[in-house]
Each structure stands twice: as structure tokens, then as C-alpha cells.
Image 1: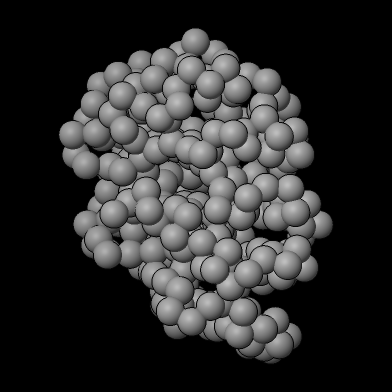
Image 2: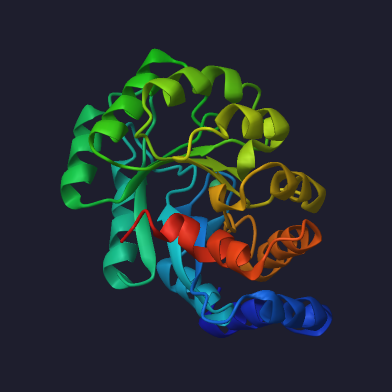
Length: 276
Ligand SMILES: [Zn+2]
């Protein structure tokens, strides 16, 4: 896709039928909030989706989003250890170091010690795991070992906890209880077990619920059930987009009666405080 076409696509997210919703979003974001997206992908996916560093940065500029956590997709070039896609994310970070917070991705079924070490030494800020794409359970001993390594290295972990997941709370809770310092982001807010997750993890302040591609009514339940300080905004680009995920998150938060201070936390500071 050439640059001009891509810019038109981005423009369509805030023009035409989106003018009204986008104006509403702009009016709801508390003044001075530097919006941070806790869930975005750069690279290519086996399903054909792709996002470049430049494309991601252009989307952030168009939606006035200042920072994003980025990590690989379910990459056809993952080889055994994900090193190739992790290099793509690192190159994106080097290109836009003020915009991106790079997480690396691993496949727990493969030997991961060397790549884990390489990424930590390189300076990656966190780890992304996807139990559906890489076909593992959250209480698999190789996965539990990875959580331990991340806690030891003081690296946050974002876990896909959304579409097509079967077990989330029950396999994760023992690890969370045993590793209170582990900083964990539940991607898609554990949407298939959302209420159970809010109850199980509400006493664990290092577990954050991330909002990308969760339905508005489920986000409303989330905002009504959990301290908003434990919730952070995400887009899941390229599966979501910034304007519509901001609209859904802010709509649900507004309906649940969140204060401006709470909204600023969800959009920015709740996760930003992890990356000073
Ligand atoms: Zn994702």
C-alpha cells in the first residue's frame, strides 16, 4: 500500500461517519492527558495482517496518541525462538524511541532461554505471550518458568486473555499469588472470564486489565466491578484502531461514571507509571 492511500485510510477513521464519535472522544479525553496504548503489534501475521513502524506512528499522530507498547504478531517468520520478529520490533523502537515501548514475544514450546536473555540484555521493556496462537496453557510448567524469569528480571508480561481462551483465572491465580511482584497485563481484560478475573485479581495491584477489542457492555461491567486504577487502554492495532477503541473505552467508562482523574489513569498513568 502506498503512503498516500494509507494516510487516506487513517483519515477515514476520524472523518465521514466517524466525525461525531471522534469529536466526542476528543472532548472526553481530560486536558493534558498523554494517551498511551498498552497493546499494539508491529510486523506481519500468518493471517496476512501487517503493521509497519511508520504506519503505527502515523496512526498515533492522527489520533494524538503519545506512546504504545508494541510487540510481534503471530509471525510466519517466527522460526523457533521469535528472534526475527523481535528484531523487527526492536528496529521500530530504534526508529521512534519516544513513541514505542518494545516487548518481545516467545514460544514457550521452544527453547527460549537464549532469546529471553538476548532480549533482556538488549533492553526490551516487557514480554508478550499468546496462549492461543502458540497453543499453551497458562499453568504449563514452561510458561510458569517464564513468568518467574520475567518477575526476576523485573519485566512486565502482557498475556493474551481474550478471544478463543478457555482457562484464564484458574491456571493463572497460583502464579500471581506466588509472584506478587510480577507485573501482569491481561490483554483484552480476560473478557471470557471477566467478572471472575476482577474478583480473583482485585487484591493483586500488579495485575492490570487492558481494554482492546472488548465489547462496550463488557467494558461497562469491568469499569463497574474494578478499581479504575487497575484498567489501561489498548487498541490491538492492526486488529483494532485507535479512534474506535478509544470511543468504546471512553463510552463504557463514561456510562460507569468514572471521574476525569480516573479517565486520565485509564488512558495514560495507570500503565505509564510502569515505564518511568
Ligand atoms: Zn493483540
